[in-house]
Length: 330
Image 1 (cartoon, helix red, strand yellow):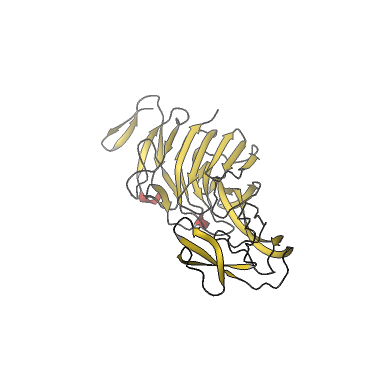
Image 2 (cartoon, rainbow, N blue to C red):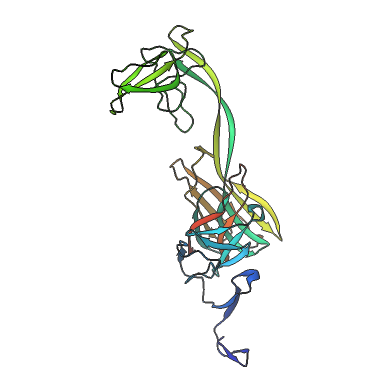
């Protein structure tokens, strides 16, 4: 239908359909959109001036849950992640390829899809938590409780490697068993203070000697073992859905052990029929988190997609997202 305005009324004239869409929720802004199949492919990198109006050319964003804004070239919300903030666009198809990139920091950010309204939606978001583990290590030529002096600024037992790598340490030098304290002495040849010995001459080529403070030599030289604890970090994707306002966890990806600061580069969701394929590659190359979900015919699958925030297991909740991409599916 074609609508025309006459005396503040709208009249229907021809066979093109319009759809009423609320762009700003409680802020009251509305528009009319032509409906002609699925929305064509488009992306939003949010690189524009800070504003409480998040819409832009080609993107009629709907602040479905919470208030969103453009801040520092990212999409930002101050809403608590426990309220599951959502910003979506209407794409007029249940089959789509939608992607959301990492924001300024944190976890709990991700992609929403099959969104019907604020009470009925799906969201795949990032998650990280820490855990404590114990390990045995060996050290060469040093007594228990002492590490190597020349350890590159990271005091680790010799030969030990954390699950994600780590500094293996170095053998004790000729001065015997040392702690990790270092003393940067004067010019080359000036000598070291009492209790210190020369570790590296002309350290880093800067004309200064590196002096090391030695620990007590209470054991003979050799290879020894010890036990210690460490903190590891596991990353995963959590798929949730909301049905009439009740949020539940639908599926969880495999877990990847990697460094604390690593995050997925993006969360990508491909929907086709009753299935959703979710992938999220780690930004340090540690692997790709994956969920293959077969929702079945009983899932309420809407025609909106977008971004989402959620709580995380280990804290560090995100409040920004970036680099949104959408294309219609088959």
